Length: 114
Length: 113
Image (tube, rainbow over all chains, first blue to last red):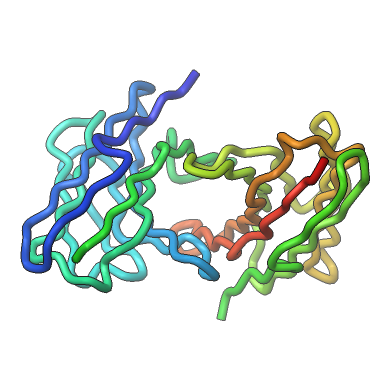
């Protein structure tokens, strides 16, 4: 079974803090994704990575950065957290860009910024 | 603009009853459509995938249909169980531009005893 894990289920941070969200997958997938999920909206893509050290902006990259130094690990960084970044953050991985494209999701991190 | 719209936003049914969730999309050209189930506090899990040539696909008590001409899909749940309470998300993947994936906002289903 594919397993995608995220470092925290719940996080509470203060405005201006630097926040790191970690995601690890154990199936040697090339592609990894970070989404945020807000009520009434579909998942929105923040960043994705085709492979190690590669990254592409998604639909809402402002205020975020990412790092992929190893194939199994994809980190999302909030340089200076703001209240409008309070959300559920979901990480996903996928074997390759083409094809059927099933994404396997982690359990999510619910981030609250006070 | 590529969009995926789901209806209803939420639905309450009694255990044992059937229900149908709807998904309309404008993504073109179309590659495939997936239905995901997301339990509370968990990440989405794929239920079915449908490509252009497929009309119906079943996964246990879940049956998905696709009409590629009208760009509509439905997910039918038969003999609902309490464990079916979840959000159901329709996801459409395009066939160009990096195979862009568009997520619907989901339908929140509550199954009551």
